[in-house]
Length: 479
Image (cartoon, rainbow, N blue to C red; front, side, top):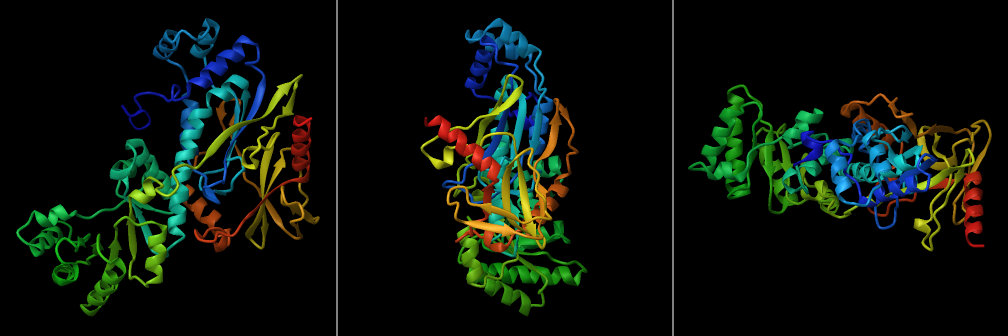
């Protein structure tokens, strides 16, 4: 049974057992109602240098529908590890906290809170796993799509459903790929659910089912005279496939129709596309497009571009929908403050690994712009203000001698209110609007920050107050 697609169940039980055992423990020691703050962010080690935030709409659906059914409570009781006071609280459970998040389609960087939760401690703990799986997956696929799109000026069609790790991954992966720039999909359910433009032609089996390739092409043209896209590599791409396609296209044009183009799915795509382009152009079909597929990734896209391949649209499946070269975003969810004596006290996880040492306190992200382009991000304490009329100097949090001073700059705070006191206060945008938000966000960054080879480091620094607080806490922990 597929929970999130079918809607047959809510996702409240989509959690790790230790979230529930900790929540039960907080009840036992009287800590459950203390306010706490958690940040969801991703680490950059071994992964992507930037990411495209995605999955927030599904987070809101999850939070709004959070409740434990009688069957859920009965199952948890059967485990024999939870107290009755806790189980009773679960029966009445609704999320009452606050959530801030970066809008979907916004480019973010390692260490920046994509999502911030402030709630009673046990509520904030309970939602961790589901928030991570919802944000991690879609942000990963949206980022993979964005990286693929950064490698070519051609359009990219997502068609990975048959290679996805299950129905949810295929459907929500198609949604995420749309956010990252792949604005069409072969996935009909994703098209129905999210309004994504659906695209497709025929398989090799169509050609093989007819007495000849020409018969197959003519039959397809008859069925779809104004949407005729022919797969030409079943037998001999240049010897029969393209010539037969041209013959059918001539017939369509003579009947007043406009053929779409051809698709290549095997062979030397650079050579075949150039030759096919020449043949189509010489036959008077310069407006016909060339679509290609065949296990394409970033390296293949860059190589085909360097070889001046004549390709208008790429269909990418496996390497996109599975994020083949980067299996996980590496998103984590960490406590950053907890209530003590009526005030929020910053907390910092200390590790021998720099990547695993966290930033304490209630925070915000400020993006710094110069002449309309993003120059740096600053992670600040929430109560800090930045005066854009005065010079602002930022510095690398580890190599503090690396400094930059901004004058005559603009700023934008990235986190927005999504839930207040358990109530949704955010107007969810359409997927089309989210796609436009990504296009705007991407256009704010110079290409060197988005390229997949020799990516330029984008400055993400801590404000001086946050940097000082972090070092004070680290010093205290080592006393």
